[in-house]
Image (cartoon, rainbow, N blue to C red; front, side):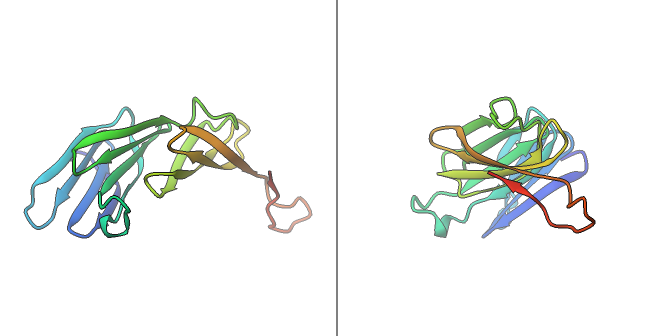
Length: 153
């Protein structure tokens, strides 16, 4: 990595990091060898590693989300990309930015970002069907001065 690291994750002996130069690299910290070195289409905003011991398949996956809203998953055993999902362009909710995510690496991904109005938005995606299932738009704080959020379904 030649630029500042923007996200990092660790699972077992693996370390995953992405930088503002659009590179995502996964190392085995025992050997020091890179086992995955990929260039994203945009600057990474978030990354994650699965826990192989918790996976039904026993595989370890790496995931990266870039500033264009593209979520990518790699099977580290095969060193191959298993999913490329454009979460902003295909979002019925109108998600225009995606800044963070949480996933089980096989069935679902939850992304956080912003709608065209600027409101914070959380979106649930079905990974096998590669489609948005549901979105929640988080309104501005209560105009009466409280700080309760109105979540619309």
